[in-house]
Length: 128
Image 1: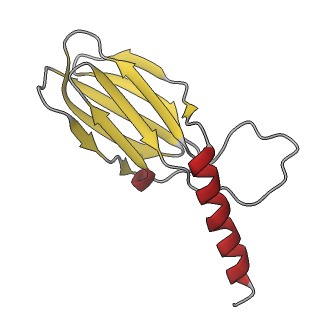
Image 2: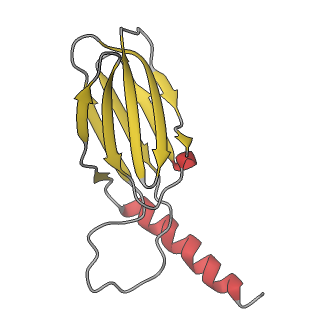
């Protein structure tokens, strides 16, 4: 058991160093409207719902996901990381009455309800 500890400590240290120096990754999205909401779907591989924060403001919806893990590796190719995701989308007219979010199978679905709000709403998605 004690042999696992140095590896764990190395991963924690590497993750902290990566999080401090990395730029957040811009997440691609698909967005569409329904009669009830603006729906935004985004891939968020390798994060948990507790890593994600969704924020609805009067004109934008934004989500970020913390860096989950950055093991000490020497990559040959490193095009994405396990977290450090971010995306902001300007809201179309008529949307912003509330926000719901679900994270399932590495995919975040955010529903921005029709209506308006005059306050900032922050939520954590539910996990399925």
